[in-house]
Image (cartoon, rainbow, N blue to C red; front, side, top):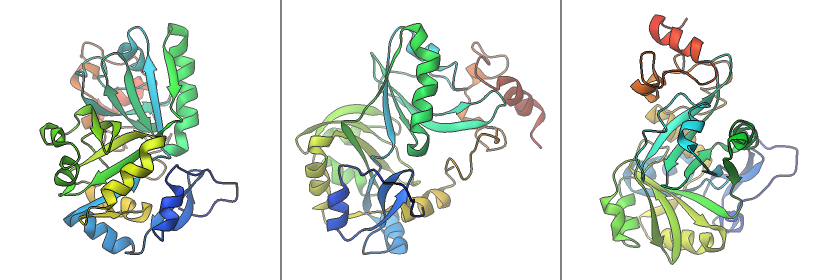
Length: 289
């Protein structure tokens, strides 16, 4: 989270961050808030006790659409995509030919398409990887430039969001739905990166500022920066790509075999078939160094 010398991109919420007194830094090519006036420690504790809002619009939001798109994506990830029920989301990761991890991601089954969220620093490479592998089979890979992404996290997140849309109370962990929030059509998943209950909300850029202002008007909600996002995920034991995961680290070495479902493991109906499968399966059987 250090300042970068190149010209930084900004999210649609940039002016709001400055107006709220955020300390801004360069991160993954974007000017992002590392903390607000509360400071990292108080922001961390506020998430643990109440609710906080992150801007994660720098991350890549991608739509995959086409014939047998779930089966096609399984050629790039060692997780069960074809068995993912509509309206559900799953954690996964891209592997390389050496069995290392190129990025981790979230995959949602939206019925007629897959919605994939990838890390900001890797999104150009991830999109190129998906286009090279999937477009020859007639699958379109569209990186969305017209939507923001925010995360409302904390034990009071459900109560806060339910005041805008009561239907969120019926969502289970990793459910994904299209819901109206603050007058906007939002893609909402019950998930996050803090170890707390919460929601990630994809919202059209044109409605993002109004939605965020509406959520921050609630006394239970504070804006939270990347500093507390990092300390929260560390405390929760959640991996960060580029720090705990990299192209040399295998899923077994990273402790991520829980994310490889039985159907994709040795002996499963759709075992292997992804880059580096030989190493990953060997390490799952024999252990890693």
